[in-house]
Image (cartoon, rainbow, N blue to C red; front, side):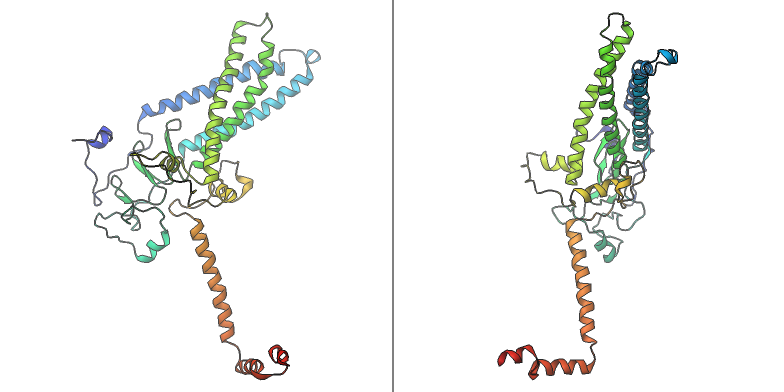
Length: 366
C-alpha cells in the first residue's frame, strides 16, 4: 500500500538503486509553478506604477511652468525618486538571482558522496576524515538519500518539489520557484532586506499624497490608487518585516528554517529539545561572514559571497582542533630547537644547574 505522505509522482516510481540513480528533472520544467512568481512580479509592477504615477510625478510638477513650480517639493520628489529606484533596482537584481541561482546540490560521480547501499564506500579514509561530518544517524551510519542515491552532507535535505538534494536547505519558496539553499541564500536575504526598505519607504513617503487626497476636488481614481498603494505597502511591509526579522534571528544563531523546525517543532510527539544553540554557530560576526561574504563592504551587494562549497562547514569544534594543531606545531618547533642545541651548550646548562655558584639555586643556599 502506498504511503499517503508521499506524493503520487513518488509513489508511482520505485526507490532508485545506488547503481541506477534517477534522472535529474529539468529546472523550471513545470510552467504552472511560475504562477506565484508571475503574481508577485505583477504586484511589484503595480505598486511601482502607483507610486510613480500618483506620488512622484505630481511632486515633480513637470506639467507646470518653472515659475509656478514648488521647487522645494520638486527637490524632495527628485531625491525620493532616486532613492526609490536605487532600492528597487537592488531588490530586482536580488529577486532575479534568487530565482536563477541554483542553491547547490551533491556533486555527481564523487566517491565521497556515492551511496553503494552495502555500507561500503569508494572513498579512502583520508577523504572521509576531511569532510568532518556532524550529522549522523542514531546507528552511527552516514545519512543518505534514497531518491538521489547519494550520501548527504551536513545540513543537506531532499526537496520533493525540486526532486533533488539541496545543500544547506533552508526552505522551498514558491515565490521564487526555487529552493533557498547554500548558493542563493545571500540573494534571498538581501531580497527581504531591500523589499522591507522599499515598502516602508513607500508607506512613509506616500503619507503626503494620502493627506492631499482629502481635498474634495481630488478625482476618485487618484484617491483610490493612492489609498490602495499606501494600504498595500503597509500590509506587505509588516508581513515581510516579520519574516525578515525571523531570518535575522536565524542568521545570528547560524540556523536554517528546517533546523529551527526540527528543534522547536519535532515530529512524532517528541519533546522539544533544550536550546543548546547550533554547532555551526561562530558568533554574530562570523555567522554574517558565513552568509554574506568575508568582506563586509560587499555584504549588501548581490554578488557571489565566495564562502565555500556547501559540503563542509566550520564549527566551534573544528576551529578548536585547528588551534590545537597549530599549538602542537609551535611546541614541536620549540622542541626541535632544544634538541638541536650544541653539545657544549648542553654541558654548560648541566653544569650550571648542578653546582655553579652563580646560579640562582646555588645563591639561595647561602
